[in-house]
Image: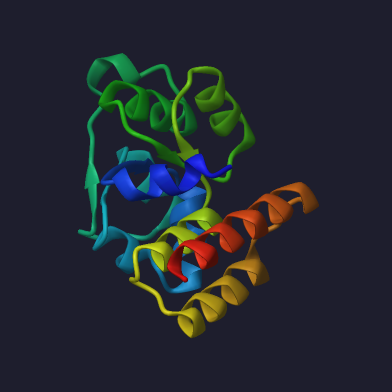
Length: 157
């Protein structure tokens, strides 16, 4: 689990899926994340979310992506770019894990923003509360998220 702080320290770009865009927007932190790392996605994500922002770069999958769903395109895009994926979708996250890719969800990205000092403790707490009003995380995901939060708090001193 301590490896997560090393991942946070070197994280500079990621591919984000629709659910994470929505969750981070509702938490009030999508722009903050996009101002901290380079976010990229596929055009279908903007169609699914209805959120149009210049904060997220678009990657065209070309002809190779014609037969793929938006979720599959997100995973393939992250794989092609060699960068982590931010998603709430279990299938995307499981595939990333199987392929040895780094992956995160919106809750972990809020902890990342705290780690980087973009959010202070108060804003982090508010953002987490906003996120948990709309997200449906399993008890296991919440447990892991809490472990990551505690690691971040310890690292910050």
